[in-house]
Length: 162
Length: 173
Image 1: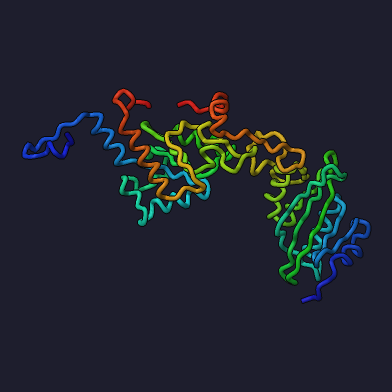
Image 2: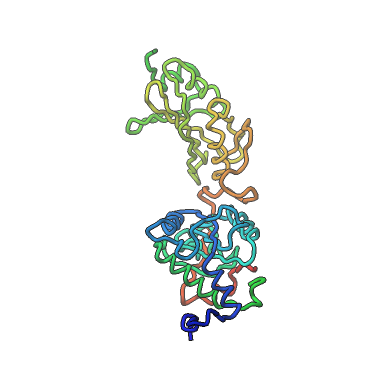
C-alpha cells in the first residue's frame, strides 16, 4: 500500500518519521568539492547538464566542509594529502557520508607505491565504493543511488551518529 | 647585438680548469663543471656577452648508483637572445660539500633545488629555504634514489580478501 494510493480524497498522508527524514536526506545531499585527479573531470561531467546530478538534489558542490554532508573522494590520495582529507572529514557536520570514486581511492589502483594511500578507507570510513578508472558519470550516479538506498534504511537511533 | 659565442670555448677561456669535460650528443652540449665553481660559471653564462643564458628552464638529477661520484645535477638553461640551450652538469656524492645554490642567479632555482633535495637528497649551500616540497615534512629517506624501496603492498583479490582485510588499518568513525 503505497503513499500515492492513500492520497485519495483524504488530504492527509501518513508515514513513518524515519521514512520522511531519510527521504529528505536523500533528496538534498550536498557533496563537497574533493576532486584530486582525473576522476574529478567525470565528477564535473556528472554535475553538468547532460548527466545532471541535480535530479538527485545535489546540483551544488560546496567548497566548505561545514556546508556538506557527502564527501566524494575523486582521485588518488597521496600520503601528504591524507591528513588534510581526514581534517576536512572531521569538519563536516553529522550526518555525513563518504563515497570513494574510482579505483585509486578505493584500493590504490595502479599506484601501488610508497606515495599513495592504498585505499581511502584507511583514513575515513567509506560508505560506497565506485569502481572504474575513471568511472563514467553513469557509474557515479549509480553510486549515488546505492548510497540513497543505504540512507533510506537508516533507523532513528542511527541519526545522531551513524 | 653581439655575436653568439661557443659556450665550451668561452668557459675554457674564462675559467680554465673549472671545466672537467664536455660532451655533445645530437646537438645538445653538456658541460661538466666543478661544484665549487658553479656560481662563477652560472653568473658568466647568464651575463656574459654572446652567451646570455637568462632562463633556467629546468633542473634534473641523475642517480648513477652504484658508480662514484653518484649524482649528476643538471642545470638546463636557455638563452632567449640567441635561441639556444645548454646543459651544465655537476657531479656530487653523499658526504661532499654542499653545492652552492644558484638561487641568487636564477630565482626559479628555488623550488628546483628544493625538489632535488626532496627527491634525491642533494644538499645546497646558501639556499633560502631548503625544505621538502613534494613529500610530507617528516618523511624519511629520498624516494627517487635507486636504492629506495618502492613500497609495494599486496593487492587484495578475491582469493586473499579476508587475509588482507584482517590487518588492513580501516578507519574508525
